[in-house]
Amino acid sequence: MQNKLSIVLAGEAGQGIQSVENLLVLIFKKDGYNIFATKEYMSRIRGGVNSTTIIISDKPIIAWHEDIDLFLPFSYEAINRFKDKINYSTRIIVDKKYINYENSIDIPFNKTAEEIGSTIFSNTIIAGFLASLFNVNIEILKKTIFDVFAKKGKEIVDKNIIAAVRGYDLAKNYFEIFKINIQKDKKVAEQFLLNGADAISLGAVAGGCNACFAYPMTPSTSVFTNMALYSKKYDIAIEQVEDEIGVINMALGCWYAGGRALVTTSGGGFALMTEGLSLSGMTETPVVIHLAQRPGPATGLPTRTEQGDLNLALYAGHGVFPRIIYAPGNLQQAFYLSALAFNMADKYQIPVFIMSDQYFIDTYYNTEELPLNSVKSENYFVKTDINYKRYKITEDGISLRGIPGYGDGLIAVDSDEHDEDGRITEDLNGISLQMKNKRLKKFIKIKEATLEPVLYGQREYKILLIGWGSTHNIILSALENIKNNDLAFLFFSQVYPLHEKTKDYLRNAVKVIVIENNATGQFADLITKETGFETKYRILKYNGLQFTVEELVKKITEMI
Image (cartoon, rainbow, N blue to C red; front, side, top):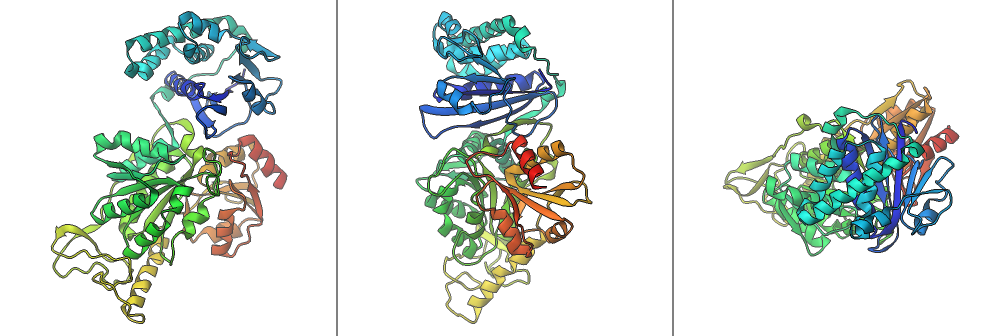
């Protein structure tokens, strides 16, 4: 059909859409196909319409495309959900015993499953069918089925292998209809297949994380469950706390005692942590917070995506205190920045945010490597002596951080304003003011450590696109499709503080266009506030879905 092919499976929650996705991405990748997969799902256990998009390509693919080549609807509601995306070239595959839809290809998935013993095996049959269309090695199919179902016992494994093989053989009758001929790449089989949650979790482990606290909340929970999976191998303390207030305070207690804790949450959960964030600011206790964004306000659209919490991370907490906010745009950045966050929190004794969103967390693609050699765990606490002062006034505002039981010093902290020893004070024009000024000096220090944004495209540009976080791969793919030498893309993986060169990049452009997944352009507003540069051209999307490459190509072309 072409060198890139998109499969969309859609149906009700409970029909096994995700099970088919989990099998297919593993099977295709192991057989050497470049894979991209993303999903959308409703916040319900049964019903509604959930879908997964799997794109198979002969070249690496990192962004969501809206075209549908093969469509497998599991319900009539799924057809209605995607009717505007179906075109003349879309092959619609159904079992007409259950869904009788015009211009579709009838495949007896359920009849075949009933012959094996139950319609429950229809999803495995579908996985085998699609694997066969792409000429996947049948031994890879069998081995993957075995690995996925091994924990459920021999009988379940054997039945699912039979189902997969029946689906594989069934597809041989339809090769001429589909004529799929996408090239494989043997190197892909040895690559990583990761989603954003995997990259953030692995980065945290590489950064020395030894504790993770959370109250489950979509879409952050997958990072928490990953950390739980790693906990025994890497000696990580895991606690599902009774509420988000307990989560942030437990993490602060961990850092106070010399640990390196990760908090993972979403907007509504983090809202409850703002008092704890201020406690971090006052006591100068490090903490790392993974904030996985979703549409608000309140519960909003709990399983959809949006870049709507930048202002929340920027301004949360009462009083003024420094913070760092990272927003990775690809798997390598997510790994590196998650590790870096622990070192920066420890070094500057501040809260550090890692911002993601549902799209980023749930999107898979294969990648050659993670930057393992560029990260290491750096501890900055010291062994104290009897004269130790926790909040000693220093030129750069950073006091040596001791931990209880390591040395002879007293490690006193308090949420009230305090003196150098950590004891409460209300000396308004004396030590109290000195403490405020000490903390404010950190703004200068963390500015010095700010990551420079990355420029893609010609250095002599006229039009500058700006993005942050999960828009990275989509804007980059759109830029490749537009092929305009006057166009460049400036990506910010650190959105606060802004790098000092930001102004220079802006001044070099005739027109600046900021692209964001929120309603107002929160990052554009931040740029204007910090630089004085008016960012009036904005491409915004906030319906709960990420941009597609085609959509962004159209919008950028219209605006330029």
